[in-house]
Length: 289
Image (tube, rainbow, N blue to C red; front, side, top):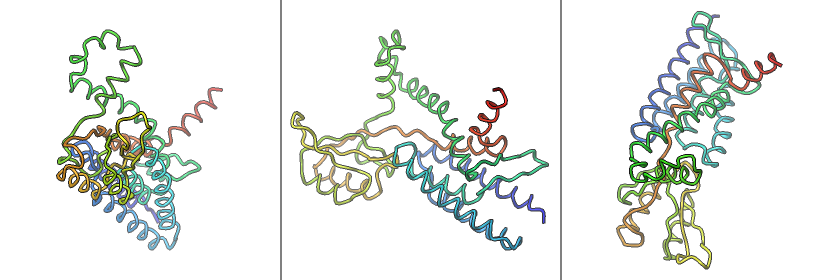
């Protein structure tokens, strides 16, 4: 049986959902759970259908295994602050729809197979192509905030590492009113002395973590986000309540989140059209040598 049309539908739906994820991520700095869950549901159902009509369990089995393995790996990388929770869910959803490479001759689409699931090619490609996105994003923030206008001397010494680091760091962090905090915000260090605040945050046992400062610091404690996933909805409400009751100040420093979904979409398209960049690079290197 020719599954070309079914594979094409899977690829088309995955690309369309990834485009929608980019739009939400760029505009709202978040990827809706409904979007990633819908794509995950489509992946499971479509591969169940493929298994039924082909009388071969490999499709649904590969879908489930690919999604689980991708979730575990990308979740660990989320803990290392590489990307946000929405990105983990998007990678997992993509893995459930396209668990392995598929060839569609008339579209000249040849996903190159490797020793790992197709979704890993998307992950690898996304990481490799994210650097240009990151450079463009930081450059946009610097010029949007007129960083050089406010620090004219730094423009003369732009190649100075410390000056460049200061410009980048100052534009990747901003102060926001606590009342305007949103779920997923990545909170920078907030210094405080009140032990009651420490107890409340520790009871949450979520993304925020309390650290004890050294004796030479005027504040006994500080709290900050542990990962790129940012604060949970419960932590967001807790901070707002503590602010309303006067336990913490009116403003808090957060990181300006880098939208990683454009890199994921690019990694997906590259994986579909050309294959795995690492495999291609290795193959070309071997041929040259």
